Length: 140
Image 1 (cartoon, rainbow, N blue to C red):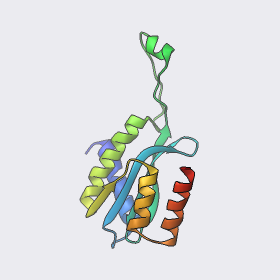
Image 2 (cartoon, one colour):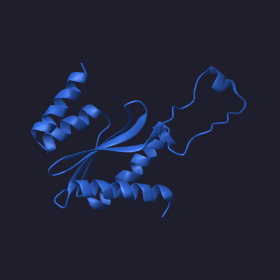
Image 3 (cartoon, helix red, strand yellow):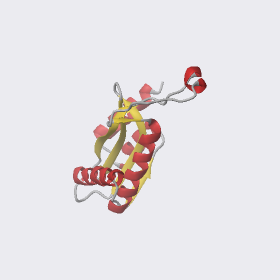
Image 4 (spheres, helix red, strand yellow):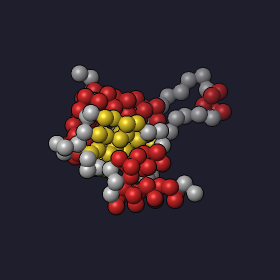
């Protein structure tokens, strides 16, 4: 088992533990930057609907621009905890593969809005409705 698979397996086990024995569904959001520079995936498992930020690493922007594009070579020094969006998407895919082994239903979402609405629909509660309302109001 590779290091990436070990990490995905550990994250999936954590989500399984948080959801509890009765959890059979997990909702998985996109890999996005939250806060200052954390690249995360949001998951919700349940019932009852446990909400979890899974930190993939510190966000490292993809290099681009005219100077970068014109360079003959580029040396990137990256810390071990830094990940690009592309890295984060790969890590999310590995996590999803692991979750599919542990949960009956794994639903995937491409944006926070879709995830928040599914959270309120799948696991109705005061908290899930509040979060959906906040995400929808941020969209205005």
